[in-house]
Length: 228
Image (spheres, helix red, strand yellow):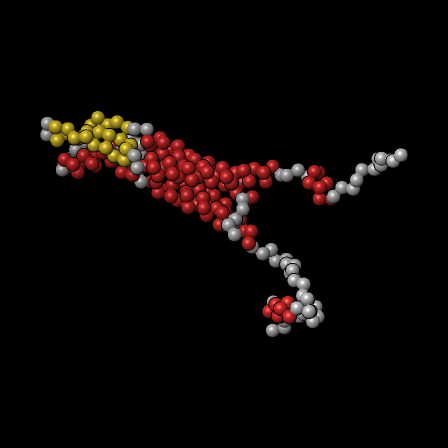
């Protein structure tokens, strides 16, 4: 009759450490925030660039007894949201190219570009100045003003896209320290690397020639490099 041992099997120290030390919340949040920030930043910049090209305001200008329909798109009203969206998109990419204080500065630039795009879209949503300038050019009258001014929803769509850029910047400021860097997986840490040496068969001339070509001494230490 066999006996069952009550002594539990030995445990690997690495397994015990993994169970006793749960993953840090900041590290888990950092990994998740990378994808979220990239998605929000890219989506926000796309929305701002597209919405800035749409009609923001409409109106009419009087020409004699007739009236002329006028329209102004976002870039005619204010070019700041589109310009800041491009800055924010560049900053979003640059976040992964720098580290330390440089990453903090770039993350701040990303957030500020989103905030600036939000404010410029909301403050410039009226469009009256752009339509007045268009009415003056169309009627050749510098004192001409637009009448029947109406606004569309595109300025607010632009502001919503800019808000996504702002959120991406805030995520970068909060979790950016734990985000990976471009080329980080290829950087050397300064520690010596173990070199794998292929086995050399002294009875095979081709193995001897290959060892010499690698800088190894096939007659002595297989891992010794050639002196020259």
